[in-house]
Image (cartoon, rainbow, N blue to C red; front, side, top):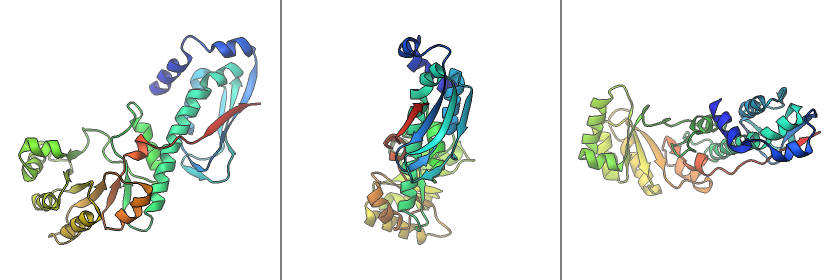
Length: 273
């Protein structure tokens, strides 16, 4: 995995001068990785790849990817091999494991917060450059769903696109013509724009930073339209305290940038026998 290779090169550089001075070259060891706080574990296979690349000889996961663990501290993996190799990979492995598990845990907390509403939790493109695939996989591990992966695989017409196209209907029509095989989503900041998007046949409407009254009005407008109407996605400033109330308005999705850009790192440690 190229990402792991780059991360290791960044950390190890010309060599681990501390381990080279203090750890005998021929010393073997067993490293035990423990989770120190409750959460969803995700990133074990990435950690396995880190230790493989530094020359460890074995890695055993003691829990499944995406599993919520309440009773901590708890041992979640064992790595074996040259002691210097394990120490060389330790920080990179724990950085990735902690970050990805943090994303999965944050997602799981949001999923729990809206349980029973029928709405679903989505991620966004607000990801760490180079880590998007892994972060979006962590969102899925936490029970969320992936929004578009990039600018290439789905249409999302935003405020600037609407201005440049000349209006809501014009932007939707242009996207239908330009990419006829893709679903069309459009951002709306007002009920007037929601009504225009429904009339123009949008597949999904992103309700940008609307208050509860605005979200409820958008749901009512969609439900009163002919046919099934577009799916509705609430977005902007959603936190764990507000998620349940927002989901209760009847929207279909909550898209939450903090899943990937602000998830607290889950705390792991590695100790050698």
